[in-house]
Image 1 (spheres, rainbow, N blue to C red):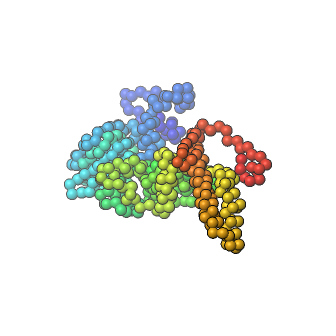
Image 2 (cartoon, rainbow, N blue to C red):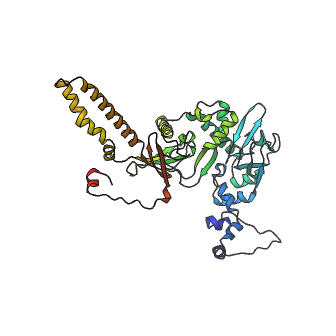
Image 3 (cartoon, rainbow, N blue to C red):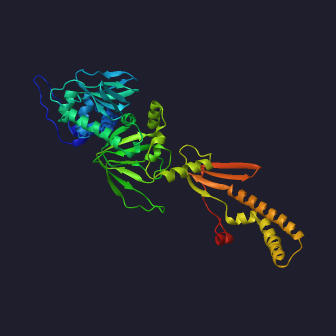
Length: 439
């Protein structure tokens, strides 16, 4: 059946046993039946389970047909927080693949291993030929679902040593996370626990995991020896030359401190392995250890961006979570001239000529007091006009357009419209608009 779905040629041998009867069905007939009834495809094979198993690194060496056999042999089980899955010393009869949740592996005198989504466990841990029992006990630390597969059946399907392969992947995750400068200020225990809060992925085909300009909410870690490509657009929207990257490398770490758009696109190459740490999972870990782990992250060259974003949020307190400013527009400079024309008129017609007269012609002493009063009026009216001008703005964010007008000490009002509500973006201008650049 899986040969029909994926390979179109036989990958196994079938033998008719004595007393059995076989009914041959032509492949073209099954294809026509599935075309007529598409839901039949899901009824014939556990396609949802196959798609999930396809993203688990432990099974990354299998093709689609092999994944189908694993899906047939697997059963999905669930546990609540603090439920034991198996105990140390029990016979290692099953292997487990975490679909969603978290598991801790414990053994007296040994460090605790933390496992998250996509991780594998249940192998013997000891790579000796005679090892047949679990070295560690396994317990669900939160609500967890996992695939359970008979270890002997899985060994026949995969055709290689499960324990050695499982230990290799687990150690690679723990060593990679421990070596990241990002977690350099974490304690050894905290770095070990991070492994239980990341999702471990095998990405079988090229896939964009971070899109430039879109909000990113996760740290992505490229595992050692695996490849990715970076793409970016310049300010004019022209594509820059893409860059290849070989792991270990990490991307999007600034998302663990605050929400801001990604500055480049990250494309995972086919058959690459990744770790993903969502900002909410980092916060959950922080609550577990009773510490603000966001502040302990060592970011790379993002201090200026962080400070600019924090300053932006202090200036515009109405920004929502995940909202960022695309452009800030103010009224034309001619409006500023019009708002301050009384100050300009007094300055050019009275204050400046009076000051020159007082300096060079020896004007009477009373003119000094008159000029002082005029100067105060000029400064006051000019300051009022400037503040009024800079308190009025039109801001475009990634979600809406906001217009604010404020008259100091009198009133403030703000209008906004969601981007999807804006229908007319026409610009109308005349002779003076073309001459002075407004419309």
